[in-house]
Length: 426
Ligand SMILES: [Zn+2]
Image (spheres, rainbow, N blue to C red):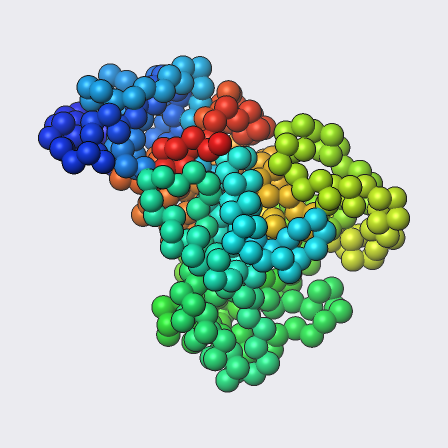
């Protein structure tokens, strides 16, 4: 919604008429003076005012058109650039300690949501391994006091053994109230059996009957086409075996299916053949799991990765993925920024910022990449009614940067502050 002067006047009047203690006019906060990239197609707004109340945006617009109510708290942001909080359409939470998985707990879920938020990722869609604690975190986050990343969940990654089993597992997912169903259709470079078409068809049909969408992990173009044919709703990784073609593009566009590149997932499969440059970046080290960092520096582990055939194949796959991303973006397919962070050696938060840089290196403009990581990711995950842009009535999730990321995408690293529901992330 545009910040129409009449709307602002009405909003301000409404604020002043409220008398309950929890909603005094002083509970409005005005963020003033920044350049605001609101995530819509609107041009950046210089010297903008963002009004926030009850965790949500009340108004965004040029200072001259937004009336700050008397008694509002003020946060001066002159010289800064504000972007919507970043949305990771493919992460994982709560499960990893050091280089080990299988440590799912409420405490680890919260830990991960804090880490994501510290890097400006204010929403993460977890595509698998989610348990009750993740559901509880999701159900508890619709509050104006939230100060870590928002979470949406897929539940367990389903691996049914038969169509009947598929129906049963999807029904369990539905009973658990997941936000999406997740499956893998992949043979892990020829090393494991791939889910049979009659099984993933049963998953997709049952999910749709239950009103759930299905996200698919895949690697091969032929599988991508086959799952789209079967009704899949979200492509959770890049196609990495061969160049995408017109038929695939047409299939994605016909049903508006989004494509999630997860380029950093590929990087993580081979980069630790030596010590990556970012292991000395204080911005990385500030929130990194040092047990994982230390393990990944061990020469024996690095040597094993250097000698790993699969690492070398995924390294080649990344080049295919980069070209496919550019081709799909040019063709008008909606790209949802996602990384597949959360498993060991895939560092949450920092990797999302690297993903944005990689997307630019693949040929997208900073504007396209920012859209992919905000509005488009939110749309792709059906979160756009409340997230993804800075507009009236949406949650006040945003990142304050010291420089404009449209000029240089690496400026997303220059984080001055992160806000979730208008609360500064500690
Ligand atoms: Zn994943």
